[in-house]
Structures are given as structure tokens and as C-alpha cells.
Image (tube, rainbow, N blue to C red; front, side):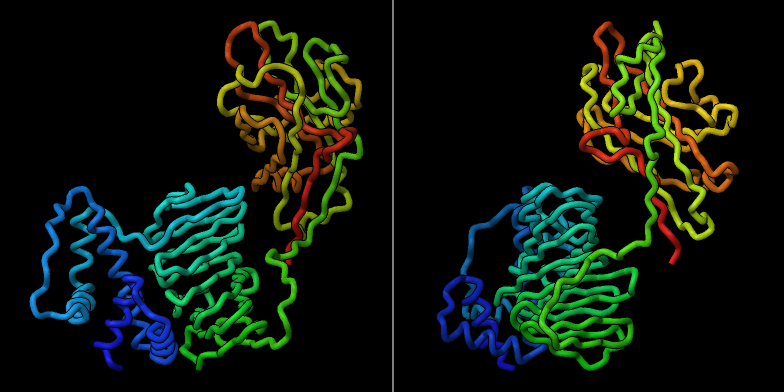
Length: 445
């Protein structure tokens, strides 16, 4: 490999002065030589690291000086050879870790991340968990990754990322040929292409689909690489690669769960401390913290018949409530976060409650055990609220009657004053648009 010529091409590419013939020559060298690709990766990271170092406000920038009798390619050769020793000192001195990527754009994204998540943020090495939406991450090498929730991604360098779970589509321009996507089962090396990766934790498998171009797949054992081309796909397992030659098909990114869903079949009701039924629309399950006079406190309860569910085959259970606007009171009279307590009825003398029951006769928190809370920001008056905990499943298992009642009680007080606070509401089975309370059982595999 002619390193002098290679660095001349690198410099021309970086300066934007490369001509079409030199561009084709560079692409040919990168495709045919692993050693050339390694130097190119290092060249990209050196450039990113030095740029980050130069941007530090603590660094005094001297006037540029000419380099006597040394060619530009030789200077870059020295920098590449020394970077492994010098770069850590640079980054510690500047106080900034090297920037490898940028969060280019997001669509309805929600995150759990140690890295910044605002669009335009500069991304260093670290892990990001996208819980909702879509995010586009643009690496400094030019590679672009469209990440689909739910997914976890570790950024390693400008030429490498580790997709720990979830799905992504990667577009790789000429400048990023050789971009590597690691997965728990192996890794994918790009050779000038766009491709899709779907890491399926539940199946210990990573699916690869080539949209256009070429990639090579590798297992951790270092087995011979498998090449894929446009419209081909394969799965990387822990010790083998299974190639599919058929065209790309729609593939579900989610593991289908065996789920049983139960509704209340209309057995749900709200009560008010003043027993004024006109303040209790039947389509709503309402909760409100008591005021000093106690006139307008509200609570709700609802029941499920679980007699047909074999709880020994259940791995988890969720209680889902759909929050809807009540039209009563002001949200700004609430604290920033309201807690709605969920109780399981244990006083069996009140288990046969019926709609129309009074406040005094109906089930109350003291008639049961607390299972947990759901928290609702005061700025939100609609959405799906899900409660899941071991205490919920244990409560169901200890039930003997096979009919269980849950009680909702708002446990945070409103802001003091005469202006009424918001009444929280959830859809009952009589709501014209939303689904009533639901128990969702996930069965063991």
C-alpha cells in the first residue's frame, strides 16, 4: 500500500479539492484494503478530536505557521502514528471528550440517556435509550442512522456504533465506507450501502437487510465473513450466519406476546362525598382530593371477573386506565405531579357493591391494601396510564372469590384556596370514545 499516495487522497478529500478520478481511486483503495480503511477511520477520529480540542475556550490558538520542507502527507503520517498517545492528553487538557456524532432530528422522541437529547446536540461516547419515536443520528464520518423506538444504542466512535436492541436503518456515504454496526450477536461492516439492522433480544438474533449496496457480516468467533448485496438478508446468531436470498419482506420489530385482556363489563362506578349524582357522569371514573368541607371529594372503584384466568401461567399483569378530560376544575390548582393511589379491596363485606351505592356505603382505601401509585403531570389530561408491579399480581393470586375490586383515590392535595382544582377522570365502559379499565395478563412462554 502506497501510504504517501493514500494520505494525498485523504487530504484532497478533507479539503474538498479531490477530482473525480482521485475520488474513484480512493474508493477503490478503501474497498480493497483493510489496512487503508483502518487508517481512514483513524484519520476521521483524529480530525474530530483535534476539532474538539481546537474549539476549547481554554486553548490559545497561535498563528498558523508553515512546515519547512515537510510535505503535508508526512505531517499527517506523524499525527496518525502519535494519536493513540497524544489524543487522551488533548481531551483531558481541553476538558471535552471527543464528539463523534450529532443528534440531527427527532420525531415524538422520548429518551433515557446519559447523552444530551435535544436536536442538534453533539454526542460523545455513551449509550442512548430511545423509548418512543424516531431519531436521526449523524456521525462525523458522514454515516447516518435512523433509530426506531424502542432501541438502545452505544456510540463508540465516528465509525462505529453498537446497537444493543431495537431497529435502525443506516445510510453510509463514500466518506464512511467501512462503518461498523456491532450487535450482541456479531457485527456488520459496510462497503458503501444502506442497510437495516433489527436486534431481537428475545430471540438472541440480529436480522440484517441490505437496501442497496454491500455489507459483510461477522460472528464473534471470527468465522469467515458473509457478504450480502442489494435486496439480500441474513440473521446473525451467536455462532452462525443464516443467509436469506429472498427479497426484503415486512418484519415485525416487536415480539408478539400471549396476552389476555379483561374489561369490567360495566361494573365500575364513582361516588362523591356530597352524594350528588348529577356531578358523576356515568362515562367517567372520577377522583378528587377531599376539601376541608368534604363536599366534593370523589373516588372510583371497578371490578374484574378473573375466574377464567389461570394465574399460575401468568408472568406479569398490567392495569390500564385511559385518562380523559373531566371538564371540572382548574389544572393550575394542582401540584406539578398528582399521585393516584391504587388499592385492592380485601374487606369482603363490601365486595358486592352495586352502581348507585352512596359514598358512605362504597369501598374506600381503608377497606383494602395499597398496591401502588400512578403519577400524572398537571399539564396532561389525557393518555394511557399503566400500572404494573409484583404487588398487583400477588394481590390477584391471594384473591379467593375470583372477582377483584380496585379503588382509585387521589392522594395529593390541591393548592389551597376557593378556586376548585381539576377533577381527574378516566374512561368507564360507557365512554363513547375511550376504552374502560383493562387488566392485561401476559402469559409465560
